[in-house]
Image (cartoon, rainbow, N blue to C red; front, side):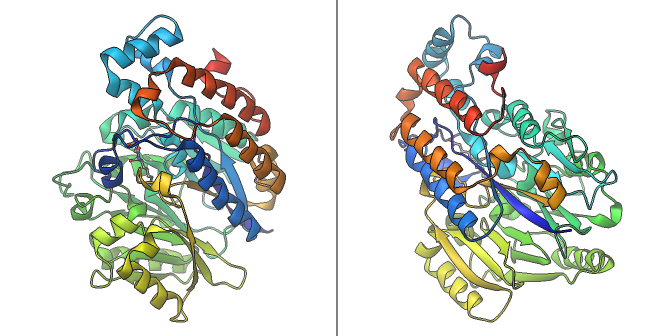
Length: 448
Ligand code: SUG
């Protein structure tokens, strides 16, 4: 049976803004308070989805969330009508209003961890929504994420959904941004690679000194248990705490893997040799020839990686077995990174081509091509069981583009977030979106 990696990209929401909300994420911090362009952001994301679809890749779309999250503000004690809740929050606690307006759910690599059916004990595709509890603005995503994923992957015979892990720092879980799956073919058993930043219960693992390590070992282990993964099908590795302190807040800022290949920076991990040997050994048991491509720090520094997002790229398999790298244009702007990529693609190795995309609106909040997509490996039968409304087609691209043009503002600053009209605009837009994507009622304003 045929199998595919389907990339579900997050559609940027109408409140995309630069709130400076993510301590440890250099771009988010340095672009704080700039005004944003939500329309441009959404169109940039859609252009990437369309391009990948036209290249022959399976492409889907994941809906944004209701923002401002009035229900979240009510939980924090703001009351009255929806407009009063927003006005009071703006007056008394602007940072909370900003957090409740974040369009951060666009970075769907953080939406969930997904294990394909070939890896799981019950032969279903498993999803665990990420609790994202390191940052308040992201911790409010998972209930809607679960409803949206439930509406996209609704067939219980093929898809199993798990609620987010307990919402405490010890189980900090950032989803697929710290999870990679290696395999020979997408439909065959593979090895799932979980990268953690710290351990909550075992102080033998070093932790970063400056910035938070968002993913814990214990969260990764819990997800592997929930998904019914075999010990021989899992490898855990620790992210180098030194790079977290340099702004590598997720592993997908310093490594990317696909198929049988891991593309990573020399400084990405602790105990790299041991980890590579374990990956190689476990993959050999499923008949796979693991290979790794290490980018030396002499060619590209960690700082280059953080600024250019070289590793936050999409590594895609082409029919001839070679691979294509989808990078943000910031890679082209960095001479060392661009030189490295020229050398890489002309060396006759696995990665033969690089395609550059303008994702500046998302990049300015620390979200590159890989952050914007959630990978779901599916066989033909499973793909047929996915809600067809979320699979990208030329007509869907047309509808979504028209929808963005109709509903999105082209400029948003902090003061605009206090405008209760923005909430009405978002709800009107999202109500229409659920019809376009055939999701049913998934948003709090549609349910309560
Ligand atoms: O969680 N930025 C996101 C970026 C997530 C990138 N995802 C992956 N690497 N997979 C974050 O830090 C910034 C929001 C703001 O500052 O307005 C933000 O949430």
